[in-house]
Length: 104
Image 1: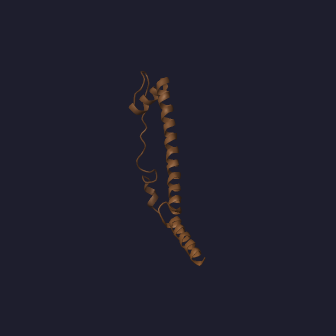
Image 2: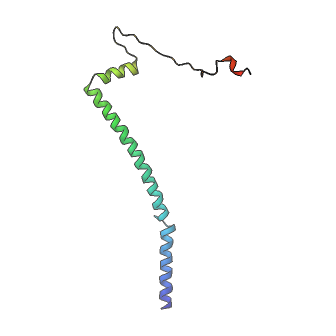
């Protein structure tokens, strides 16, 4: 009976070792769960991007307003008898060109 008990303890110990430290162990399982969660987030972002792209292509196929908007924004095209103004922002921050700032 003692040898049988000792044999069961040895087998149980080996199985526990394999469960915690072997291939496909519990830490591996948790690591894979994290990878799956990260991949799901990536997939969700890609699905949202795809929805926007599908909506954009549908808009381009069905209407002329989207085509006109793209021509204006991306190609800089304007209509006849239309005035185009380009506003160029100042590269310097507004506080740097004030000369009285450093005098105290």
